[in-house]
Every structure is written in C-alpha cells, then in structure tokens.
Length: 233
Image 1 (cartoon, one colour):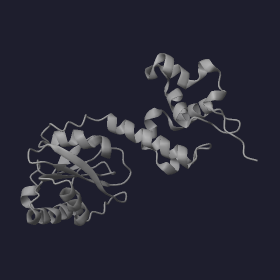
Image 2 (image 1 turned 180 degrees about the vertical axis):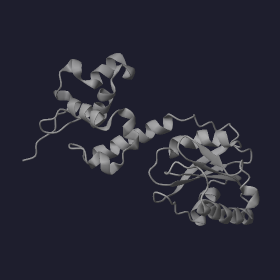
Image 3 (image 1 turned 45 degrees about the vertical axis):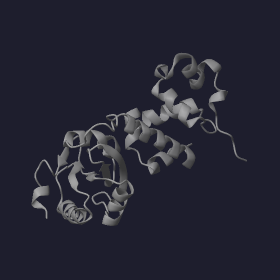
C-alpha cells in the first residue's frame, strides 16, 4: 500500500507557507518555508516543513543547493525525480537571475561585460560547459547557446554546432566562453587548439570570433585581453 506524503495543506493554516506568502509577501518567508513550497509534500512520518528543514541542515545552508547534482538531490529520502527536477530548475533560475541583467542595448566588447553576462550560467558547474555568444553588427546581444557539456576537465566542441548556432541567429560576431571546474582560468593547450581551429573556420565564413573567455573560481581569463588571439592563425 502506498502512503501519501504529508502535504502543506495538512499543516495548520497559519503555518502554511502559501498562505503566509499571500498575506505577508515572499520576503517574509524563511528559506525553509520557500523550500517547502517547492517540495509541496513530505513522506510518511516526515511533514514537508520538517523535510525542508532537514535538507538545509544536512547540506549546510541554502547556498549549498546550487552546488548539488541531480544525483545528490535524488539521494535525499522523500525526493523523487519530479521534485528533484523542479528544485534544480528553481536553483538554475535563481542562479541566472542573480547575475547582471541581460541588456540587449549594451555593446559586448569588453571582457568584463562578457564575464558579467555569462558568470551566472557557468560558475559552480562541475563539468565544462562551452557557450557561444552571438552579437549583431553593433555588438549587441542576439543570444547565447550552450554548445556542449563535457567531462570534469574537457568539453567536447564540434565546429559544426558552434557555427550552426551563429548562422541560425544571423550573427555578425561571436564570442566563445567556457568554464574550468578546476578553478584555474588559464587556457589549457586544448583550449588554444580549439580556439585556433574555430578562428580558422570563422575567417572562411566571415563571422569573426572577437574573444574567448574562460571562467574559473571568481575569476576569468580573456584570450583577447591576454593577446592570445593575435598569436593564433
């Protein structure tokens, strides 16, 4: 026999996060109450408010959630695939919203502006993510595409996928970006080889690569600023 989980509606009315949010606003809720709203229900013998408190205490604090993998979330008793995916989606939205606002009227030519744009998407990732940023003729943002997700120390980048995104978005310029899970933002030999290969193709297609930014732990490296791009042919 399957037992239904303890839901928020089983709590006394004045303790229900949803009612508190409606009457007091979301800022009035604790981290545990916000998490309970996402989870919605606990499991037999564990009300959702207690489950959310236990999750936060077990992992340290609310900030630890953005570093957890789907597997680690699924290891929590009472969390199934659906809830794990919902929680990961909320964490990813929070990550992106915490970064600098995406301003399509900005000119994305400086490495600092590029870093501020992509940091929410790439920081704290356990694997390498390779992103292409597409710009119009005025260096205004068209869009961003995650081209590949690799291993802990290597992303697998195929030129076809890079330039397919650039052509589909009718880009005048592109910027390459990826993260180093090791925290070291210095380019590896493989990074330089990939960049050189992509630059060669970009010249043929007439879609210049204006920078390649690598993100580490709270730092970044711009291959343009460090004059690597000028040495690649």
